[in-house]
Amino acid sequence: MKLGYTSIIGLVVVGISITVIFGIMLPQNDMDHSENLSEPITENSNPLIVMVAPSIHEKYYKEVFQEVIDYDVMAVNAMYGKDDVILLADKATIGYFEGRVPDEVLVTSNVVDIWIRDFGTVNTATEVKFEYRPQYLSVDESDWIDESYEDWFSARELTSKKTDLILDGGNLVFNGQDKAITSVRVFADNPQYSQDEIDQMLKELLEVTEIAYLPEEEGDITGHSDGMVMWVEYDRLLVNEYKEPFRTQVLTELEKSLSDIEIIEIPYVFQEGLWKGWPSACGYYLNSLVTENYIYVPVYGLEEDEYVLELIQSYTNKEVVSINAEDVCFMGGSVRCLTWTTDGTDANKLLEFAEQN
Image (cartoon, rainbow, N blue to C red; front, side, top):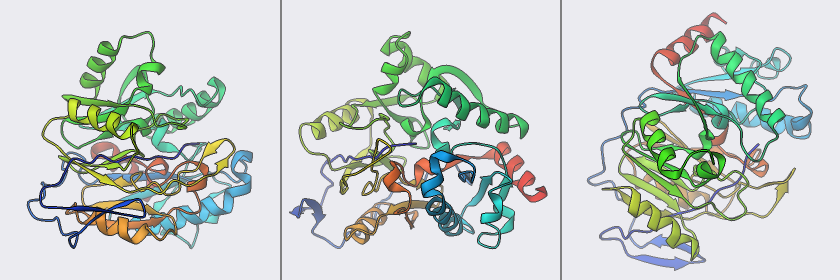
């Protein structure tokens, strides 16, 4: 259960002139910006990507069950061989994947919802489990989802810090070193603390020195930041190409809060539509999954897809891999929303369990 995203920040990139064509900012050169690129993120090296399949018994996803299964198959196969990946599914559902994905990625689990990014731990230089109590779900719904994840997490003997701060994983974007971006939703979700107290708590929990608090995008039920911005390198940030005055509000906050970074605006293509009250995420390219060597970018069958893929590739040394998200984006989320990553000891435990399983 999730929402769509937008954004981009346009600090001028030296040596690149910009032309507006059909509302999209197009660099007038050949988009080769690979010179003097920053070193890739290393703190999240060799992550394990975890996805969750919908249960065949879950009524909420009944009408889109096959579309989500097909998306999971496609995404897992696109990631397999590049990064480690596992797919969690309950016993009644796992058979839908047999023969369609490598056997070693399938793990039996009773995690009950597919949007694992939001209720999973947040992985920065450390791993933190925040309280999962979003405004867009009832307490019973959020507890049901979170308890299924906590039970699985404990059963696999995984470890993390825990806090009573409410924060969705989709509302935290980490640069791999010392900076993070969230939105002002974290202040509204934790009224028992002052903004200064929340800022200090987050910096200590996440082990970062700088945090930007973006304004919420109009119409965004979730208040998430991970459709608005994406780090392609530790000091290079892509941001949706917003209209004024929201554009200035976003850029001002980023420039004020984050030092020594380059901000680059990227097009998005807003798509009308609601699914069970959730605005579409189709056309939002920055809800991508970034790993050490790859960026898995959603595409939507739009004419802008190829241009945006080339544009993103021009700003990073990582390999850009397209993931067709047409089967899921109408539900309000995209590639990053449907993945969770962990590394180190916890990743090894999960890979060992997957092999035994």
